[in-house]
Length: 285
Ligand code: HH2
Image 1 (cartoon, rainbow, N blue to C red):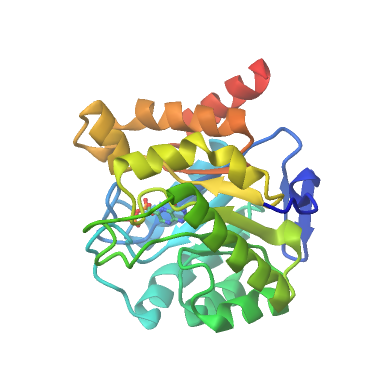
Image 2 (cartoon, rainbow, N blue to C red):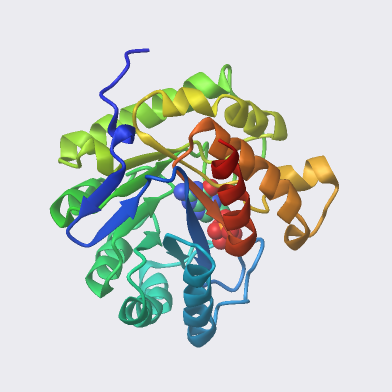
């Protein structure tokens, strides 16, 4: 594979609406699901006030980004309309930006939702379909915001039925490189493009492990890498923990490996605990 100019050697990523500091290494993205049905915390922060409070708590506990989503993407989840996503996230974003400088990312694959969220104050687009909506790339370029491009095989409705790859690492890598190059064509600079192998999105346990074992290949592309393993079912398959809330130690192991290998952002629910993991790994390294 052709090596690219290293966008991931820039320690500070700055854009008109925000700034991320990678000088210590890996940073934490805290998950804020304003949904009734997310796999690990569905319903807990569906109420606007609870969502705002939890978002603020995560910033105190070490989150450098708050990722707000209004649609669960757990296997088999029902899609949520753009209007309903907007209704759920906008009041939370508007309240949070008055109280914190931590950049907010909007987790959506719909450009209407992303646009309204950016107008409300969000500063990053997290797109689990990696710009499947063509307007998303234009929007990120016009608004000069970073984008997170994630790989998924299939859709949340069918992705876990029978995921298949000849070469999971090669295929996911190739897909992300194509999407990242497309993002650059839209005018998004390299340092504002993050790639994400999409742990649990159309992948078996072995596919997830293979991707994590080879995460350095994604880092070698020169794009910054985000990984989201937090509380996911592959951890439960290894540890036997049925309940997502009991997968925190398993998550910690995967986060530690990601930090050692040079991942730039870990997307987690348990910000305080994972902040400790990241700090200790950084100190040892
Ligand atoms: N995982 C989830 C949602 N969004 N975005 C990125 N970039 N990477 C991920 O791994 C990722 C993501 C799923 O986790 P969660 O938000 O907790 O669950 P749900 O989709 O059920 O709301």
